[in-house]
Image (cartoon, rainbow, N blue to C red; front, top):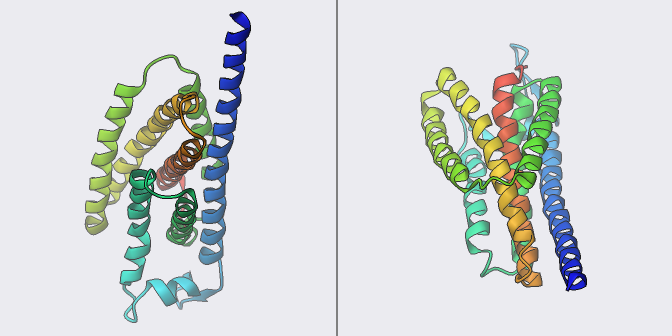
Length: 248
């Protein structure tokens, strides 16, 4: 009997390890795709204006109108990842793994274009330092979520409600352009995204240890898990950057 229990525990540990290896593989792949595209676009060939400001040629060509306003394409790039992310997470059962991979790469690429503005607004040292601060906070909460014995379900529900609140406030602030509201949203965002990281890690741990899942379902859910952690990390990074980052 003990031998059977030991074999079961060994199998559970092995599939859990494999699941999280895939989850983090997808997460780091998305970060790599987005980071490379954001850097190439945001720091590419620059146009220097009379007042000393500079802006990437790519951004001027595709994201600005002839009068200097924001083009509709910019808003498409900014909001398209939201629709793709929802599609991936809500329709993954009906979609093949190959289709999910294509959507995942498209999502990461569009996010890279959107994140290119970070290199226009903030200085490189502050981007780098904030990235490492975000990585440390993310890793700490991920470990906490994985190891804690406390059920974080109610906590996760609270974080979701706060997330919806700051998401709506963020949309409103696009038009209001209030620096104070932006700061408050960012502060709350740091709390929300670190909290959701712990919650999602606990949920992913439960998924990883579910031995009833088929191989294809585990593969799909590992991609979903990687996407979720990627989204949380990016939003945590952006929230911290608005608080800690110094502008060019």
